[in-house]
Amino acid sequence: MRNGEIKRVLVKFSGEAMAGANGFGIDSEILRYIAGEIKLLVENNIEVGIVIGGGNIIRGVTASAGGIIRRTSGDYMGMLATVINAVAMQEALEHIGLDVRVQSALEIKEICESYIYRKAIRHLEKGRIVIFGAGTGNPFFTTDTAATLRAVEIGADMIIKATKVDGVYTKDPNKFEDAKKLDVLSYDEAMQEHIKVMDDTAIALAKDNRLPIVVCNMFREKNLLEIIRDNAGICSIVK
Ligand code: GTP
Image (cartoon, rainbow, N blue to C red; front, side, top):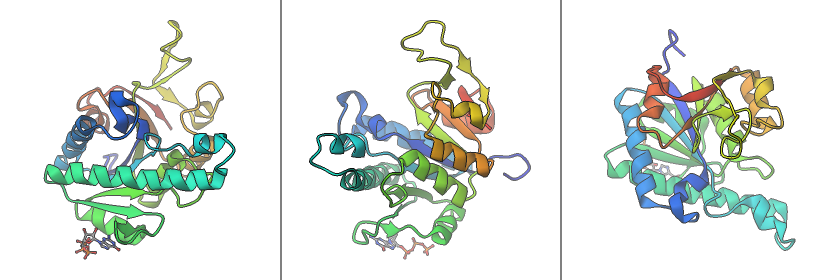
């Protein structure tokens, strides 16, 4: 962060978000919408890294639940799914004239670049969006952890977890009327079982590196830009 100004961010989208109402696969309207929100950031000179989950295509843990697919293989399948989402998002962003590079933690050189941290930073400095695919390249790590790791590596000023809700609540707001939104939480509060902003590994990594985690509603138009510009964006922040 330079002079308190947010210059570089990592935005994490869940794979499920890509599916829209279909619940599976990739919804082109959602892709178009997200691309438009990211474009606003680029137009405001914010450097953007993106991580997308893979749950709209395959969930590692669920795939292994039937007992046929081992957890490790299920997780690798999930990593491949994130690359599919990354390529789809690259297409959507390029479609509206943005410059994008996909870097994968697993080498798939016919499809995209491999993850090289110094190269990722050069791309960002040149105003290119970098989408990080294939998680951390290791099983047993979530895409939230991968996103936090990449955010720390590229020196992002914050990680934004773009979700379907407008922040962190004391309880599930869909089930409990008395659920209260928490505007600011500590890392330790964010790790509590009933809150669980991200998994413990991701939060511990953010805490160790003093990386603020913002949780926000991706479907509120201009929310990402407003949050970064501090213009009444709606969100919760863990710091
Ligand atoms: P500069 O070094 O700033 O010119 O960056 P650049 O990314 O434009 O140059 P480069 O020649 O590295 O890449 C040109 C295009 O090829 C970009 O779209 C890259 O994403 C792509 N590219 C680079 N390396 C690989 C790779 O290993 N595999 C795949 N599939 N594409 C690559």
